[in-house]
Length: 191
Image 1: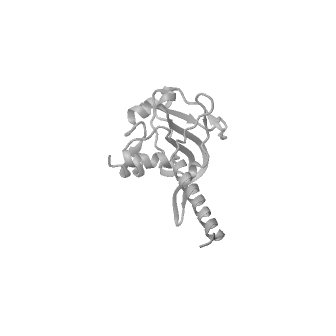
Image 2: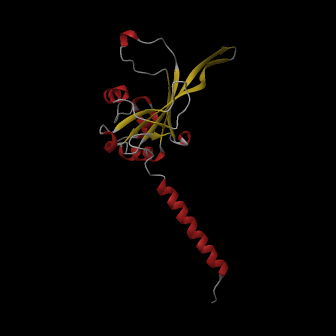
Image 3: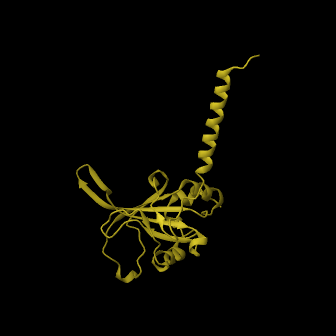
């Protein structure tokens, strides 16, 4: 039996493909919460390709229920990085490095013959929650990626603790996350 160059190259190519596939699968479980400087979170790229948790319309907590703001309906779309979602489904816990994105869109209503309902019109806000106990102490920090004019910024610093953390701690169903409002999270985890 002689040396067969074609067979050799086919085996090398197959081995390289296996390494690439295994590497990409293993690499996808890396935490998404990667910080610039001490506590600045860069805008996560490709978040619309993450697991879509769900959407709410007009849902919000007000600080003072007696003096609620006028009704301004907004859609809030929630995404979670895929590796954190898989871990949550398996364990019932959000792992360190989890990032949740909250994308806000204005609501528009249609009322015309044969067409009724609401839809998302314009994106007006982007926020994130990141879990990192060592960096923040309280585990979760919350970030805004839109400036006062509604334009996206490439990185954000965390809000003061009282701005988001305290409400999430008091009212969220699981680990500072409002899983009670999103069946994708509520029903996939039986832990």
